[in-house]
Length: 197
Image 1 (cartoon, one colour):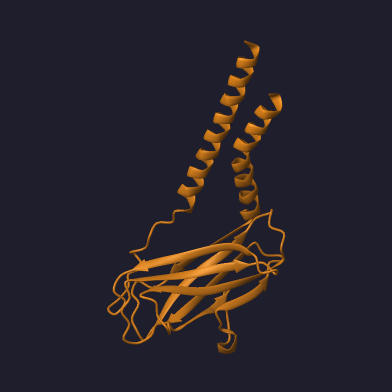
Image 2 (cartoon, one colour):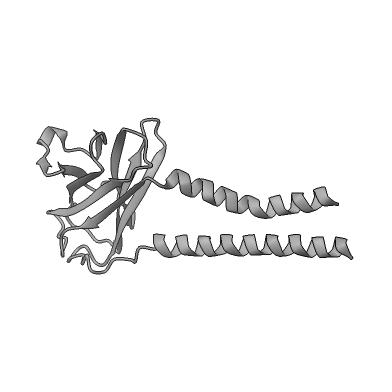
């Protein structure tokens, strides 16, 4: 009976343990990407900027930052999106690509800016600029996106962005974990009292 009770408690606590482990793995690096322009005009370059920040728990020394974009409707030729400046240093035209590898040794923050050359005759209801940070083994260390809505054939206002839901989701998961713990404790106490009777 005692073994069954312990097994139930372990099963109840397993989601919490997985949540804490995934949280520990994901900690150590954060990233953001934001539009720098108030309007985006087809045929011209839309500018954006962002950063990748690490804390003391981050161990990898090299990262690769990858830019991508998603559009609605999807474009077969969405134009060119590139990094143009890293930590205040302008990149040469030859080095302006959608990927940039760098070392984090001696630095806790990498700031960047970039541009996206919008195709002509463009109509979009939604655009999302995406940044993915990869470890040397290809695993994802962090992700950020800048969703923008509007009519890009006229302009796209960076003021019409979706809220960042990362923090509220984190709080909801923490609250759910706390509820799981309380439920497990309650079951454990109930089982003990039942045995005592």
